[in-house]
Amino acid sequence: PPLWEPSGNMCSDIRAMLYGSELVYAFAVLRELARENDMEKEYLIGIAPGNAEERQKILSEGIKDKITTKDIVDFVQSNLKRLEDVSRICSDLFVETLLDMGKMENAYIVKFDAHRAGSTFVYGIYVNHDLKRISLSFRKIVI
Image (cartoon, rainbow, N blue to C red; front, side):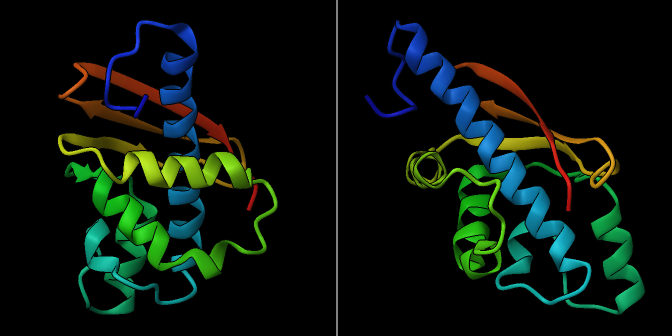
């Protein structure tokens, strides 16, 4: 069944957590890469065109406003070429993540922090109002 439909079995519940983890990881990698290069559709993740100093400040902070999972998926899909050299992204699971999470109507990343990216971990909290679920995803990341 699609991720947004309650399944009643543990495999589907775990899948939702894995998807969140994959999305947080890809989002963290792309945000880190954006420190050095312009990315496609940056406006989807709260980066407005501006000076380089302001851009670095935005990218070094966690997100302050909620961002829809649809917008994050759109941002990730628009920048897939940048992820080609990132071997730690599991291809099959990653594709499933983008397909399923891109369909969520009422889901948001409400907190994301990559302050420790490159040294320990990143985390994201996302809320899915349709499933009445709050998920917290931690990922170790080395960039």
